[in-house]
Length: 322
Image (cartoon, rainbow, N blue to C red; front, side):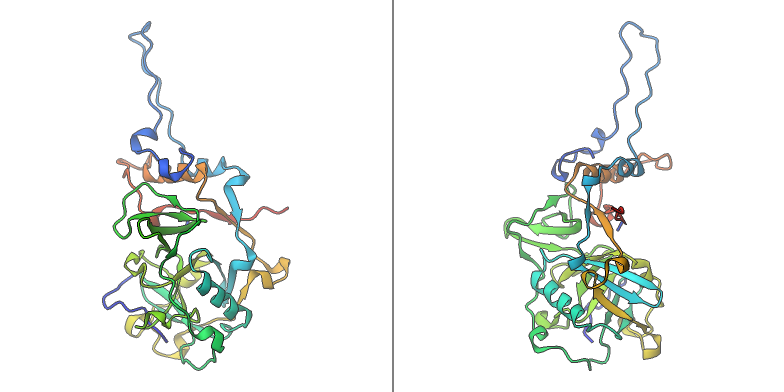
């Protein structure tokens, strides 16, 4: 069992047309109506309150949402329920292809959640290393970052400490290095990555993990991130913590069995979990981020005027029935 190497690590939920042009806090709240010159003693009309995130989502048009594709969605069935994972082939094409091949082979069936490190990750795979892996799937070059090419990237205006620029690709938190022409998915809550050993090329997608705690962004560009849990992250985050080093379970009895892992496209339509995610290249999402950056709810005394990449909400909802 490969381990994510980290000696001292502890550990998804529109103002502008594009996130690139999000205005700072001062532009979010509507200005108070000026007192007419003809009525110098009249009181100013109260400022129109900024829309809340709930109001923004309620007003979102159907075009602001996209259906999660069945061909790139995994269903991991646990005793407590289903975990829905959307894979992102644009930013890890070969690794995603390998994982989907494992799913079609039913490789993960009967394996287990082998590690639960508090505030960090839940990891699953073959704890004993005895399940055969087809030769064509054994070796895979790492995809810690890939050429951005024509991949659409919606930048976030706020600064970041881990990458030259951060933003979103198809509803996934991502980062990029424009001079180098590289882009990658980031380790935000719910991110799904590939376990590996010391050799960077040792991760082939047969061992996966999901971030269940504070975003471990220091892992970015050191591990291949392949997708995000869209539903059911609580089924992983609520599991008992591992009792051995790095949160691995000391005994087989402590592990949570995996009933099956299937691509959604393999199941009959009646057995699927159709979901939609808010598109991150829309005015709706830009407004949502602005509202989170500058909270004007009655409870808040001082809006932050800033938002971290991993704190930007990416709403998911059941797909409307036709």
